[in-house]
Amino acid sequence: MTRNSAMHWPAILILAGACGLASPVLAEEEQAPEPSPGFGGPDAVENLIADDERLTPAMISKRLYQPWFDWKASVTERTGISFGIDYSALYLASNNDAGNANASGGMVRFFGSWDLVGRGTKNTGALVWKVEHRHRYSDFSPFDATLGPYRFVGFIGAPFSNQQTRLTNLYWRQRLNEGRIALIGGYLDATDYADTFIGGSPWTGFLNLAFSTGSASMFLPNDATLGLAAAGMLTDNL
Image (cartoon, rainbow, N blue to C red; front, side, top):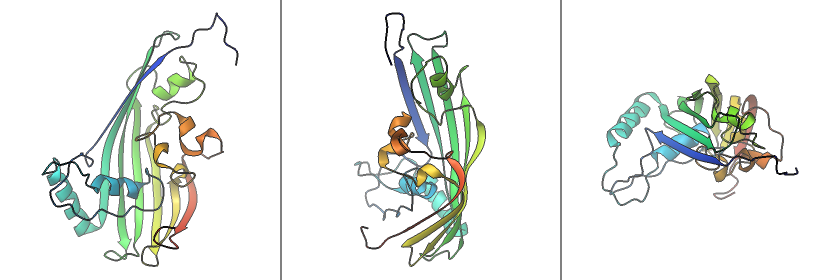
């Protein structure tokens, strides 16, 4: 691509924020055992729930939202349902574009798992779900702005569209061999199981799709798709 004097490239300011009802950076004096993560990337539903419950080493004696965690734990004990909810927002601003200098949007996610088979054992079978509402605040959503007025070569904030309500996950997860094998089938997010790494999440890592799953070098279907996935632990570390 050749740049000439007649072309003006916008500088883009990005502000992103996220808040969850299950992720304060506080810890108790006596930490409870950390939940074990499940199969998949950092945005897989059961990993999100485990990360929400994990205590951090911050030296604060009492977790701010402890009553919320205690209530969630009681629901899980009574029903086998574990869940979480969070909200994320993104704001983009450009100093030179086609007259739409601002783009902003938000997203609320409600996700969880329901142990229906083998509750209380390591070989559980669970129904897993994630429902989202993606919405814009301005004339353009961040996703549409990178395609339109910003003329950006690539994608920034791809999940922050104006898609409205969508179902991202609805699948069955079965654990076998004392939890060392996981089988998943149904409506799942392909990016949770292909080329996953901690920085690939647009919520906790990079907003630019070039740094996300596949680093724009491999074909992936739409993030929500019918599929099957399986994994097993051969040793404690492999």
